[in-house]
Length: 223
Ligand code: C5P
Image (tube, rainbow, N blue to C red; front, side, top):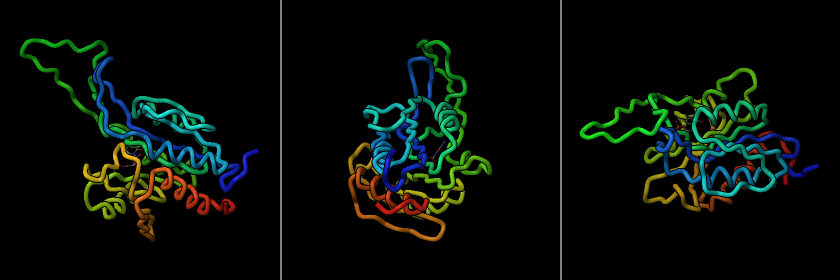
């Protein structure tokens, strides 16, 4: 049996971007690499947890010792999370697309002279918000991420309240920070009562430190 501070705990993690189809060959995407979410999955497994990683389309290998469910769209990601519940901890690190194409083509949309396709967008489900607001089957510890380009902490506090989660890991993803796709991250841990700013760390170290913190919060033994 696994040992470690999260032994006996089930942790669900979402990671990566989502792809929202325009037609069978085209999609809307974003610049998330999945590095931070995947690093958290690995760290949680190393801490002894049973880990289900719901991964959007990424080029990263599946972390060892983790059950990985591969999905493309936000709706598929929500469905996979629901399938994976119950869990002790939910960590929602995926950069879920806010919108999808409402009138996605069933066949490849053909280029026509002088006519542009008319794509209309519709809102995707908020996976974190949906699960965190549930009274039944909500993981007791729900962690969200906030990727911001300004007023990082203020926005994170608002997000914590709006989403109904217990903790927000907030980071500045302005282009000049190189966080998106990069290997290091500067994060702030925002809870209802506290803001803690961590030094710039590798995404691996952010993952380890976060897992240590979450272990303490769920009453796991100290490593
Ligand atoms: O509102 P925003 O997208 O910035 O919130 C970020 C947090 O919410 C992240 O934890 C992200 O994984 C989660 N989220 C989600 N489903 C969405 C949008 C965001 O789970 N549709």
